[in-house]
Length: 259
Image (cartoon, rainbow, N blue to C red; front, side, top):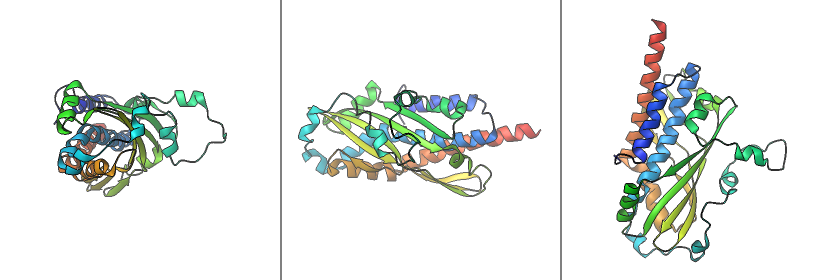
């Protein structure tokens, strides 16, 4: 439960916007269920990652990478693209215009996009109150955390479970790049999320974030964070609640259309 105005509140505000909007088709609504929980999960992960630091005694002796102080103010533009394992385009040369056109409004792209893939960037920033919680939870070691999730996933994959009573959705790995501001340096970190959602009798029953492949930070810090995010009951149950809320909206909309 985040404080008012924090990442959790902003996530719920975005979900409410989805509830109020009308999708072009029922399939797009179902796609929203799966992508929104991916985005929501990642937001929860970014907002809660710091809390795991207080559970790891090893962290107190961890030393930042000496080269970290030379890190730039923003992650390298090529970093997320390097981690994307997707088919190459027809041209081997980077398309600067295409890169600059990637939307940072994933909800709008989900609802109004027309491409075969959902492609967007989801920026995550902590509120001032969350920054204070982060610093307190890490005993002054971490001052701030900013992340950008790169989403690239085929819409057909999202539409596949629409009419299935029982289904297991497994997302391809989605890269995330984060900057961790410590008490004396800035560290660039990359990782991946691959959410897995099990649906039974049209309802989500289990969900896992699938955080993995953390690079750029000592394992003394990354290991407890990965375990915390992937196993912590509140994160997993939060994912299930979000999915089921969106599924209920879809069912209500379908029932209204049949009357």
